[in-house]
Amino acid sequence: MKNIFVVFLLFLTAVSCNTETQKIGFVNNKDLVNDYQEKIDIEAEFKTKIEAFEKRTDSIGQAFQQEAQAFQLKAQSMKQDQAQAEYQALGQKQQMLQQRIQLEESKIQEESQQTIDTLIKKVRDYVKDYGKKNGYTYILGSNEAGSVMYGDEKNDLTKEILDALNADYKKPE
Image (cartoon, rainbow, N blue to C red):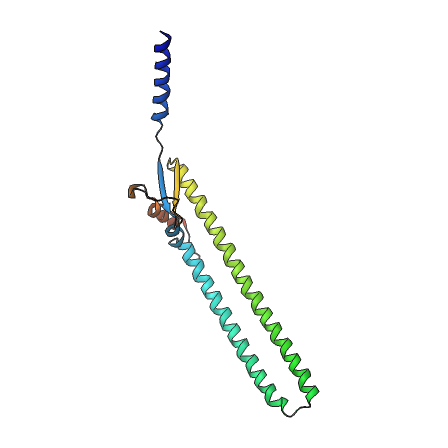
């Protein structure tokens, strides 16, 4: 009698473990982020900033070149020690311009990286909320490293979540 009870208990345990179905899906991380309209808008914004930066640096460089050429002509008629002093001043000005350009460039890079990091966190949080709202046990991320080596297309949520993300995104006007 005890054996029948133990077998019945084991059977119930096994059945109860198998009755819980797990809903699993996956997304292509690269497509999800790269095709997200907000990221596209951010990239366009930074492209504009970079183009403006490049125009400024080009004009600064051209102005400095003209100043250097004018100095070379003027230096021929100067005393050696006076020409040397102006040459050093010109060299210091060039260093200051280069430092200013490098500082501005690094600010743009830092701002871009922070913006993209914030965007990726936003996408991850959205996928997490999407999974909870839609009853998913797991939503895996597929990437170049092979975290999902294969997934049945019916479990690929990339387009579904991307469409929902883009629908939620309000393009700044």
